[in-house]
Image 1 (cartoon, rainbow, N blue to C red):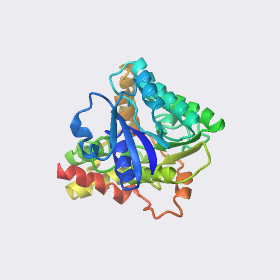
Image 2 (spheres, rainbow, N blue to C red):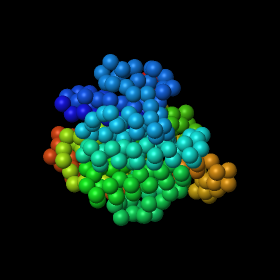
Image 3 (tube, rainbow, N blue to C red):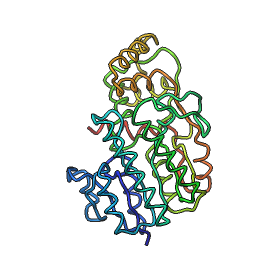
Image 4 (cartoon, one colour):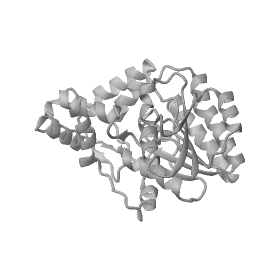
Length: 325
């Protein structure tokens, strides 16, 4: 029976990965914040061991690890971008915790699976599709922390650490209320501002990401493996909006909602002047193309009994989740 340590289980991604791991024969321990509301982990409480240690508590993590043995570490937890936190909190939670887990995995010969983000290429990559050679862009502090963690893991992998870096695109699925869910809501309500040009976006069905972690837990791989994970192909935003509108409103999205690109540029400029990272990201995501080279992921999945996801029609899982509310 493999002994696994996992972080981030109270989030959408971590919780989904844990649900899949529980279907296998693993002994699982999870780190959670000490002040986490019990309802956020209630469904796992009697199935795994819980350790209440904040990721920013470096000494707490170090002391905990010294007395434990794990075969595989799945480091999914992180302080996300757009949160009201100091740079010190971001650094400790994201970079400091990762260093402790890297050092432990290297010393104990454990496997380390790190959940990074396609955000290491910046909100909008400098080349499309973003690939293994694309320049990393620290356009906000959250992305900076992910880039630094990837550097750290890469160096350790060259010294023998058995590690993989998994970079999901913006993820959608039942129970997530981020960008895809908000997109569905705004389209249904009729106030999503469509830019008057064709842009391409690249989302990730949660099952594709779960498959990546499942594969890495159960298989050996060349250390330093790095995977961009998303649906098989990007989708044109206008087509996606019309699909959502037809599923929720029974008709295409109104053409009069198409807006001049200059207004989006102005909104982004104002957000930058106010240093509002959340709104900067929102303006960029709906006015510029962003997609990724996911060929390495799909090569691994070639021989697996795995569904290949396409945003249209698979975004229906989020539409159905929205309509149930």
